[in-house]
Amino acid sequence: MMSNLTRAERGTAMLITGIGVLIGLAMAALGHGDALGAHGWIVLIFCAVLFFIVADAFYSAEPVEDRAAAYYDDPTKVGIMISLIWAVIAMGMGVWVAAQLAWPDLRFDAPWSSFGRLRPVHTSGVIFGFGGNALIATSFHVMQRTCRARMPGQISPWFVLLGFNLFCIVAASGYLMGVTQSKEYAEPEWYADIWLVVVWVTYFVLYMRTLAWRNEPHIYVANWYYLAFILVVAILHIVNNLAVPASFAGAKSYSAFSGVQDAMTQWWYGHNAVAFFLTSGFLGMLYYFLPKRAERPIYSYRLSILSFWGIVFFYMWAGSHHLHYTALPHWVQTLGMTFSVMLLVPSWASAGNALMTLNGAWHKVRDDATLRFMMVAAVFYALSTFEGSFMAIRPVNGLSHYTDWTVGHVHAGAMGWVALITFGSIYALVPMLWRRAGMYSPKAVEWHFWLALAGTVIYVFAMWNSGIIQGLMWRSYTEAGSLRYSFVDSLVAMHPYYIARAFGGLLFLIGACIGLWNVAMTVRHAPARNPARDYPTSSETMEPAVPVAE
Ligand code: HEM
Ligand code: HEM
Ligand SMILES: [Cu+2]
Image 1: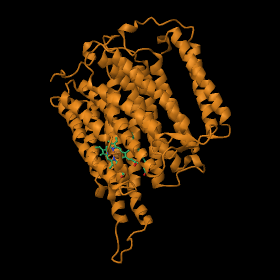
Image 2: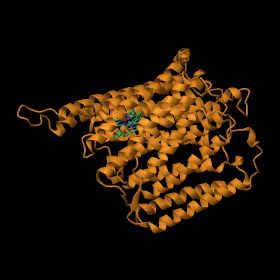
Image 3: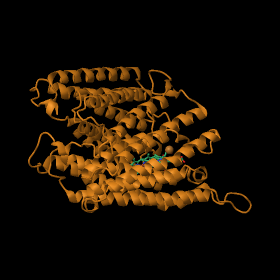
Image 4: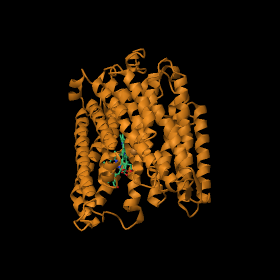
């Protein structure tokens, strides 16, 4: 890795990590006795380790590689490995919290192991750690291939990837210490938020610069989806996290918003985190890796563009469906509901486009578990968006809200769509990146597929059952008009489903572990592709599948 950096770049890296060490030191000194101080030490150690890794290689030989002739793939490779490691950690946390809901005593006699602290480690770990790293890694790959251009510079991709992981580590360790600003999916406190802005703006600039340097006149549709992900997440993150720190020596801050405005800002963010973090970027993956793997052009390129603008425009207005029956004005709720229902059209257009692309390649879907991952992901994408549009209808939400139905919907999207498209893309990408003939064990990919599918189905069915039972029990009255069931009655009714969910999650986790093992073995032991090529031929750079003037 280091041998690809010039000496000047190694110097820049040492300067940046050196500044990081100083910032860590300042945080540790200022925040002494507070979680901020502990985070200072984490920042310091993280940057110091990187500093010494680079310093150690400072005087090694200058790179010989011809930069004009090759893509820069080292950050992608590292990003894929980090993503899979986060998957195992964060899904492990998911299984643990799922088990805690079935057996609440499954914790240590310490605050860090309580459900309330472990749960955000799971949600941030899967969304940002697993999903975010996979998005960053694949976006580096896809943008270079579809632009037929190398990323400009070799420092900023590392800054984005490693800086983002520093954010994830600060976030997760903060939750364990009880640091949270109580906004779902935006729990980290002000200093972590400011850091993420720096990283994310660098990411955006890097992407734009690669596009500006492209040798391919057309901007392939996957880039639009990745760019929307990067740009909108920046906007959402900055606005939702506007806050005033109580002091610069402590982690605590107060939101700039209050009351129902705060709630609306949070769910404008939360909902669009689903749209742009958990959907748009992964659609970018889908639109690149599915046609590539199937060796088929996209069924309708024009539809993919239309669906892009539909998704981007409609999603923005739908956030208020998280606040039905609250103090939020009725018309704002109705607006969110209406846009949510309309959203079904572009969502299904994308899902249908993906499935129609497989026409003529269904025999490959049967034989190739990697392509099957992507096919099933598109099916779950269709399913979860249909379900979401349905749940956004106010009277339906009256039943589903506060129940496990929401959690079932979340995981149909998160496991069935987000995780499956990621695994499929990783299995397609890894042999390509490391120039291997294929994955080390195709059989293990097959096992992973069935474990993931079984795990998802068990999880989602358990939550549908438990959610609807919960909702119905809570609204069941006796003839005298009092509640028929106590809350504890409904908890007792949930118990078998919570056990089923933990079991389904365990299967899913085992699949992810197999995936990590298989990727590691492919990197180390799989036979090299023959003939090994340094530079992908034109068949490996993706031309627009259908000419623009369709
Ligand atoms: C091993 C598989 C998984 C297990 C066992 C699992 C388990 C759980 C559990 C127990 C909860 C808390 C539910 C509650 O509070 O009632 C949860 C929440 C959540 N999980 Fe997972 N999960 C898994 C995979 C994933 C994946 C892959 C993602 C995302 C890519 C994800 C995203 C989320 C989100 C966003 C929430 C919050 C849901 C809400 O607030 O409604 N999970 N998960
Ligand atoms: C057309 C698309 C979609 C619509 C209209 C939609 C709508 C909804 C609705 C109405 C809720 C319940 C709000 C509540 O009662 O609190 C919800 C929750 C949620 N959805 Fe979706 N959904 C869509 C797609 C997706 C997808 C594809 C994913 C994941 C990849 C996803 C992830 C989530 C999450 C994480 C929550 C839980 C938020 C929380 O923590 O309370 N949604 N969605
Ligand atoms: Cu939403």
